[in-house]
View 1 (spheres, rainbow, N blue to C red):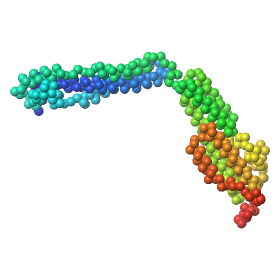
View 2 (view 1 turned 45 degrees about the horizontal axis):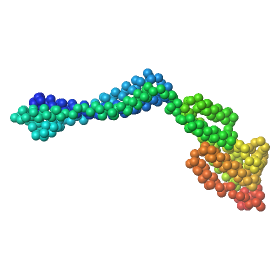
View 3 (view 1 turned 90 degrees about the vertical axis):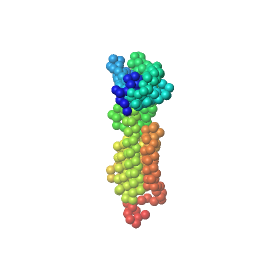
View 4 (view 1 turned 180 degrees about the vertical axis):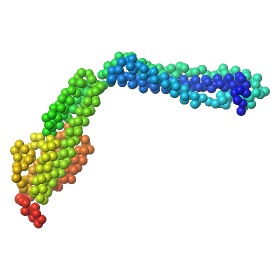
Length: 363
């Protein structure tokens, strides 16, 4: 095949013109898309910096300049899409009437058809399309407008925060959760005070117009309350297992140890707040322990275990009603209670068991 140096000069110039025009058209189309995407992304970043972080215009304006990198990336892609010399010659031939003289001249180089080829080239070059600048500007205009507004329109940091009605609803939900937690659990005084103060700070923050951090603070406090309830649920499961052992353990001493273990677990988890009088029967007044030297009978152990279990179920149910417990973990707890249910069976009312009947062969 002839090189450009051996081709008819007019043909070489026409082929180069076609390829340049194709590159320019492809570059304009790609550049408008690349730059527009960059302006949308950078405009959103500028809006975030100004609205959330309070950054001044001068500090964030330079980021919009990064959108010009779209011109470079578009040029790299457009260059790869430029058609070859043979394609350009075929295009010129079609525009000149598809007589074949241009393609023949391209294949043979200097030929007898050169005068006809010159005339055909003049016709074909006149048909070269002009770069479509208008469509490119239309694609670019919305992105440029958005970026300009993000940079210049006065905005308040409140714009990007949660609407006040949403923030109020979230805080009210937290208030309900905290109230439920403090009603159902015996929290240490310093911990209860800390939670109250965090809620008060959150309310003040929302009222003073700092919604950008309101959601984050709500999430943190909500997670803290749910963590407290989750720890109480885990302790409730351990205590339920001990209570089932206390109600069904054949050895009185082992059964009483299981009861005392359950009481200690409930106390550590704060689950003993405002227990009903029946659940406190047999315990030392003002304490969640048995009087020193006391050995409960099997009937007393079973009855006390059942009362404590019922109180425990009510307490966990209250935490669940307050939306403090994960439903999946609650179902697992309820399933575990169901599996332990046989240990809480009712004793024979006519039978009073003692240490001897718990021995092998006893009744």
